[in-house]
Image 1 (cartoon, rainbow, N blue to C red):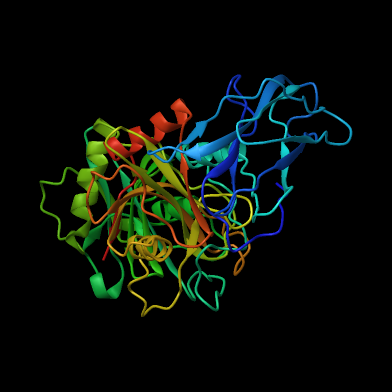
Image 2 (tube, rainbow, N blue to C red):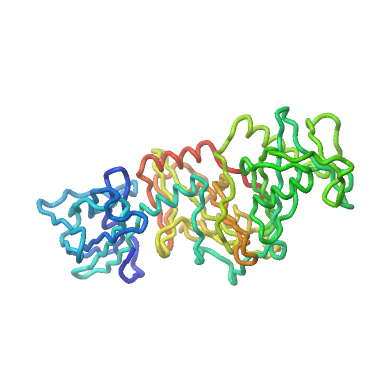
Length: 458
């Protein structure tokens, strides 16, 4: 979206708001002016064809509203439109429109999903700078994140270590895959260790990812090598992390073929495999950290606590998290934190790969970014869990990173009685109030039921 030159005086009340009232398709957003709004303004608008929505794919009636002030809840209050208004042409040079706050300008029907280009020009004294927000694209990003489909990670991060070096699997980062497989009798698939330091003990099939592997390829390979069975992943169950560069991905999977590894098949990967009812016989375990994971798998299979979540094969150079940071008040209003650097988007924070930086867990990195952008120091951030993750790993050294899409809530000093989100400092971040009912309901449902993959940081 084009906009005028940035100004240090950005901030204040929304000056215009645009939306597509039919079927919720199209552009939606707002702009900002400085402490002294201009006496007059002009708006020019055009709708260039979108590659995803060529002309003729549908019709939308788009309106431009110009608002006058902010209400107590932080929402803009519309002023009555003047008696006369001018339509903006759908093609050719943008038709100018001049007026004052409260002016309403209807546009003729336009192709659904077309990008609306807006420019605000000050006609008199006063600082004026507008960044138009395409809420259609934002809603698309939110829908992708909530659905577990992922969203492209740009090269520019909203918070990143300096210098930020690309992750390299087994060199600067260690990814572990672990699978919990259950049969119809709720028995769990176990393997007997062949490694010298834990020889003869039992554990869930697990191991390190190799360069040029996807996460699911690594999980299937480890299960096959250690148990003899082939499997299909069902969902991500948990994410475990130690510091910033050791991450274990825990999956629920089901067997699809192969032959259970017998003692005469013993090799360097394992001695044998078996199904275990978790009671008899009492197997000597390599470590007891797998017991809660078995319980988690049984509970999920009996009553799924979150939608199916599997890694999306999308490249990422660093270990990072995309933050769906939310604020709600007693009335049920919902805001989402946005980065205003470039096109508005959910903030993405990258982590250092230094093994000594144990404070770079998902929770710690999210808290740090939120506390840096909020004016009040007593901001409390809670990470509910993972909505999805993105990794490709097919170009070693360039796509070995991973992006976790994380759901968070923000409160002021742990209080839940605030009516508006914490005030932000600078112009790099903004709160976006979610008005679209379906999108708002989806986010609130995930918050209320904690329908996310849990994160365990050690």
